[in-house]
Image (tube, rainbow over the protein chains, first blue to last red):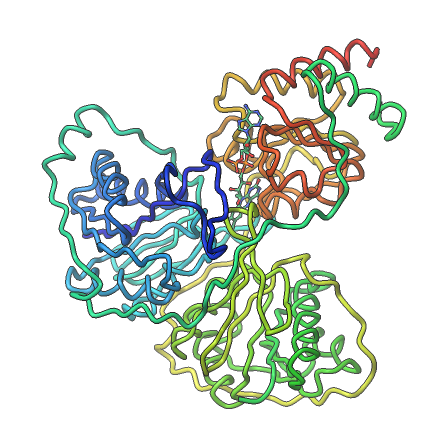
Length: 256
Length: 323
Ligand SMILES: Cc1cc2nc3c(=O)[nH]c(=O)nc-3n(C[C@H](O)[C@H](O)[C@H](O)COP(=O)(O)OP(=O)(O)OC[C@H]3O[C@@H](n4cnc5c(N)ncnc54)[C@H](O)[C@@H]3O)c2cc1C
């Protein structure tokens, strides 16, 4: 099975994000980056399918040079090779433009299965994989936790809301957007990290792929959210704050 | 380009609130743009949600029906709504942000060369559309400057269900063409996950732990606090994904919905999928090292600090208070 996994580099969860001077994006200097969480699960699913059925796992990522480190991480975990769509204007592109880049890089490879995470931790648009499916003319299923290969395609377990699930049979080639939690994530081994250095990373550009950046929707401004409630902040040392909280819970909230 | 089309979802008794909220968002948009409001739902003219909508503008409701739409599939819905949108030519399409809409609407939008502005929480003059970024740590304002329909999905709980004044709704059938081989997926019947043995819904006190706890071994720290308070232990999704706390104790949109007297969130950032499961709690306390964590937006009491210091101190203080 030839499996392509689209991965995105996002600001690390623990990084302090601050609005930049233009108020259109965040301050990117000295920001730490990491692999988007549900993309890590998509990669894991791809690697496990390959281990069971043979084949190849190719990761694809669009973004500036810095994305290279996330690509190496995926290769270290076991992906066979990578395509890096080098573009510095990724922030100005909307989901359709990014999906066009990914689809254009994937199409010539004729994958059997395309996996993506279900949503990114930074923009949270939750649709790139679905758009890629439309652009490639493939069927898709979203919010997927488990994938079983069948004679003609795949059987997948989809998460619905409030603890409900559904099984779906799909012919391949197909696109699946993967939800977190379906598998246990692996770590890169030392051997894996060493091997990753020799694996192929092919660089492509937006110009080569003939995808322009002109967006249909524009992110105009970023602001900090307004508070919905007035929160009483309890300060002091840990012991002081804890003692103050116990007083509040006892005499104001009456739950103790 | 004419009106605003709100696509509702018939979920069965008492479960249609998200569609009413989408309708409420549609009305705000109608107020801002002066455009007329129409609605559509998959089903025949007797579909309950249409009866509930009648008497309240929108003036026209489309009952979208075809044997291939009996069970939800992305392919079926994409074809049906692509055709309805080509017929009506709305300027805006508004849907609830649900597992269903996030599955098919981006494909429909792509067919019009458009991008869904997903999960919006506000509509402002312009119109501009507000949605969360960085898991609720920031808000982004989006505009749709060009021609062509603008697709929007509405976050659950973000818009107040309104009761707009009277008028009669005309229900018209719409029968899309869906070729027999167009639907490629074969969906099975929905089923429930793990037999939920823990009913957190009736708990009076809940201590809930998030990724700030760092490792499985540290869970005991929070468990101790829960025990001292006589509280149930719950967790955010990543904690359950990692298997550190059993799945049936997950709170949020894909876990349980709780409304205890006390909800104490430890090292939880407050992503919307978590908040929808607990924001109905009577008293919310948050312990987080990040003063800008979105959980503080809904908290009654907050302690900014390192949970590894605050939690043991709190356990001591609770024990000391003779609880
Ligand atoms: C379709 C879908 C469904 C989902 N369903 C759910 C659901 O049902 N429930 C759910 O919870 N999530 C759900 N999620 C995931 C959700 O989007 C968030 O990713 C998740 O809630 C984050 O969990 P967290 O707050 O524990 O982790 P993080 O967001 O990583 O937050 C960790 C927090 O801990 C704080 N912290 C770190 N170290 C310390 C310390 N030493 N002391 C104090 N504080 C510290 C940090 O400041 C941060 O605020 C869903 C997502 C999707 C897309």
